[in-house]
Amino acid sequence: MSAHFEQTPASVLARLDALREGDAPTHGGRVLSYVYDSGVAELDELAASAIRAVQPVNALDPTTFTSVAAMEREVIGFARAVFHGDEQVVGTVTSGGTESCLLTVKTARELWRADAARRGTPAGTVVPRILAPSTVHAAFHKAADYFGLRLELVPVDPESGRPLAADFAALLAGADDVALVVLSAPAYPHGVLDPIAEVSALAAAAGVSCHVDACFGGFVLPWWPGVDAASWDLQLPGVTSLSADLHKYGYAPKGASVLLQRGRDRQRQQYFATTGWPGYPVVNSTLLGSKSAAALAAAWAITQTLGASGFARLTESCARATAALADTITGIDGLRVVGHPTGPAIAVAVDESVPAERRVDPHHWADQARTHGWQLQLQPGFTQSDGTRLPPTAHLTVTPVTESRLAELTTALVAAADEVRGVPAVDVTPLLASLGGAFGGALPAALDAASAFALLQAIGLAPDAEGSPEAGAGGADAALPERLAPFLALVEALPPAVAEPLLTELIARLVEPA
Ligand SMILES: *Cc1c(COP(=O)(O)O)cnc(C)c1O
Image 1 (cartoon, rainbow, N blue to C red):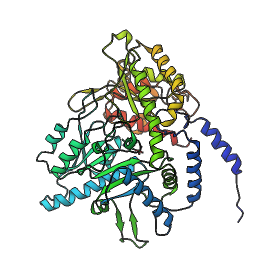
Image 2: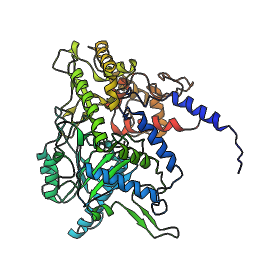
Image 3: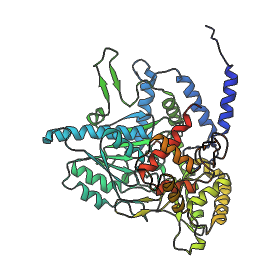
Image 4: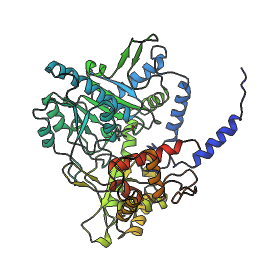
C-alpha cells in the first residue's frame, strides 16, 4: 500500500536530529544523573537491535507474543539468582522503578486489607501506613498518594544519612495499621545503605511486608567491593520484595525494572484481572495494558550478553571511579561527602567545620561545574519530622564511563570549587518578600494554573506579558535559567502547597501547543 505523506520521513528525522542537539548528552559521563552509560558502545547497539526486533509486539499478551514471556522469565531468573532469591521468589519486569514501587505498595495494601478484614476491622475505617526513612524515593510518596496509604517518614541521622532500627521498632510496636516498611539499597539522595538486616527482622516479627528498594543500586551492589549480600538482599527472610532497575545499572534503555516478590500468593495481589466486561479477559501484571516489549528485549539482550561476570567488571570500574571522586571531593577545602556511600552515588554538602570564607556552597559549586561542562544534580535541604535538617547537596551518580573521564572531571570539580569558594548560599528572603508583595502581602495558600504561571513570570521562569523570558537561557525552548541555585533555594523556601503547583506549572506549560 502506498501512503500519502505531507513531509518526507527524512525531513522529519532531520528535525528530530536537530531537536536532539538541544538535549543534554546521554553518553560520555557529562551528566551525573538520569543516564547510566556503560561506556560500551556495543551494548547500545545490541539494545537497539533488540528493540527493533520486537518493535511491533504487544507485551500485553504473552500467550500471543510468546517471546515476551520467554524474555521476562529469563530476566527474572537472572535477577533472582543475583539477589539470592529462592524458588519461592517470583517476579515481573515493569516499566521502571516507579512502577515497581507502585506495584509494591498496591500488593502490600491488598495483603493488609485482607489481614484487617480477618481482624474484624470494618473496611475503609483505617488508613494503612507505610514506614520508610526520609530518604526513601519519591516514588513511594506517589504510591501512597495513588493507593490511599499514609507515608510516615522516619528521620535519618543527618551525618550518616541512616535511620535507627530502634525508631522502626518503636513505630511497629503494637501497630496494626502498618502495611509496609520500605528500605533502600542504597537510597538515592546520599547513596547510603539502610539498616536492612535489622529492620527487615523487626518487620517480619511484626508480620509486616518489607520491601528493599534497590532500584538505584540493585545491579551494582552484588559486585560492589566490601558489600555483604546478607546485609541487604533476598537471603534476609524478612525481605518480602525487592526492586532493581534495569534501566539504571542494568544499562538498558529507559522502561525496564524488575520487581521480585516472595511467594506466589503475595505476588498475585500485584495483578489485576477482570472478566467483568464484554471484551477480552484482562490479566495485567503491571499498571499498563497494551505495552511495548522494547525495553524488556533490550534488558534481556544486555543481561544475557554480560552475564554476572560482565556486570562485575562494569561495577569494578564504577567503584574505582566513585572512590576516586569521593577522595577528590574530600580533599576540596569547604566541601564534604555526606555519610559513607555504599554504591555509585555521592552527595556533597558544605563543610561547616571551616571558616565561612573557605566554605563552598554545593549548589553554587554545581552551577559552576556546569559552566565547565559537567552536570551535577542539585538536591534541596530538607527538614525532617523531628526538626533536624538534611543539608542541601550536589548529587553525583557515577557510571562505568566516568572512570575514563576521571582526570577531566576532577579538574573541573576542583576548579569550580575554587571559583565559588566563600560565596554564601542564595538568600531568597528578598525574593520571597517581593513575591508576597505581588500577591498583595502573602502568598496564596493554593495556586491555580493562572496564579502559578503569574508567579513563574514574577521570578523570571516564564515569558512575561510582552513575551520576553527574563531568565530563559540556552535556547528558545529552555525552561530553566543557567544558574539553578536560586531556583532550588526558592523551591526549598516555599511551602509545598505553593512549590508543588509552581513546579507542575513549569513542566505542564512545556507541552502546551503554542
Ligand atoms: C530511580 C529510583 C526509583 C524510581 O525509579 P524510576 O525508574 O525513575 O521510575 C526508585 N527508587 C530508587 C532508589 C531510585 O533510585
